[in-house]
Length: 319
Length: 305
Image (cartoon, rainbow over all chains, first blue to last red; front, side, top):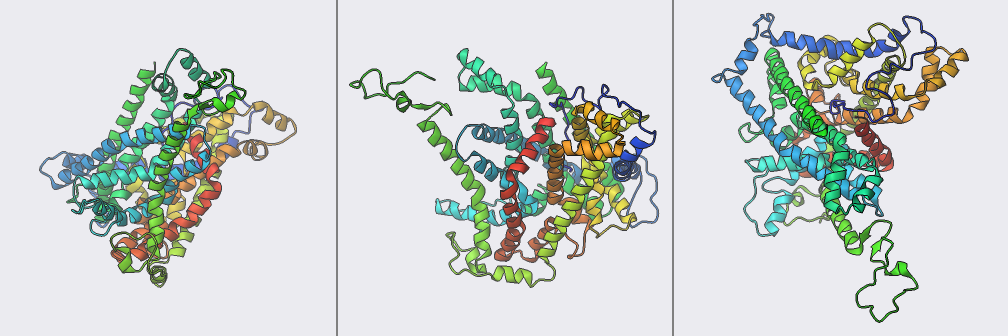
């Protein structure tokens, strides 16, 4: 469950956002009862979430190499290295951050807009709605590995179906979809849209179906056209859902790994090697885990700030 | 739109038609004209082709000879159908596809079960009991919702290594099972269940555990199904973690295993597509049967979130 990590406002009938304060139990449970219920979760949570959050920070302050017996404390040196312009690791790290940033900038607008269009289409009343909804969602259940293998074949420069059809259309010069910029970005973004647009559409669609019909009727009475109803009714009503999809999509795109790994292997010359890919390479292939941990924390901090800004920005507009 | 519109070219007809419904250019149920409906279906059809064509191409290629797989212009029907791609793959001990499929299913089911049990048990006291430390625990759990998963990558690798779980499926089942989202999601739901239902059971002498199992859980089938589906999809699609913690071909899950085909069968497209087909067809068939359920689950996650 690494993908869904964005809570926002609740639309359930429950009061408040936290555990309910109003519904106390009629009888006090035995003092250890709640802890017994919580114990299995807390065991896993403590071992694989809380402990690593702290030990990762500790690792990032050491020259932690998996294969070295000594892992000396180096203070903030790992972080300093990442901000030293001459250091190779800093250059590679920021190049990978650039790749991730570029992917976020290119993919998020498309992954926000296209699924919204799809959801509006699917929100119409027509025969076969369930069927089409399932078709659009289907690529998502395939997983990144199938999607990667499939598109690596389809986008192959010499023998791929895409270039095959382009040649039929008279474009005889093979497009290097997987080997040269800017085509690699078109491919990575396009494949990601193909793969995940159905997921976002379904989330949007649920939001659309929750919009009060009376608001549309009122807008119609006021003489609002289709577009005006979309701008003045649909969008404001959907704001919480849009915020949720945005936060989720930014995080998912910032976590991009599989598409680059499978389709381009980070090529050409590491231009599509994303931050996650680089962190995994440094930490889990070269086993310079302290440095990789430092990079993780830096990226995480950045993402938390971006999520918070998203949230504040959209909240502000709302009020 | 209850007004009857007189269609053009019908001026000679009586002004008051007998069957006004037949005269309407707009369908009252959908609010669309014929052109609108045609346009809608045209768009849906084009999009469906874009989604389905690659999958059909995958299937078609898996039954081609290596030569035909790269022939231009593209042939959708294999000119010389063969199952050699499949037999080459199945003969390869380094690529035990069905084993990978089994591993993925096993990991997905165990992981999902663990998420459901731990998250629901944790959410119940957080929603319904008062005890010291509750606020702190809830705050901690919520706080981790905002921390991206890759932060835990390096330390968890060491922890899993310390437990002797490297190259074992346990490394995939347990570490991600502490679902902060699940606890948050279920706490919200449990708090919305009327307390009267539990009070009645308490008066009947039920203890907390019995109330949880017999009253709360049966009322929570929908959110549990949502959480279960999201957990299973997450586990099924997990790629980076299995890629690095599993090594032996026998131990791999489908995503990690398929990635190894890329190198070994770089130019053998029928074999690679056969692998992709075996990995996707059972899932797509299963999805066809439970799609309403899956989509409802995903939809609900957004509404709650």
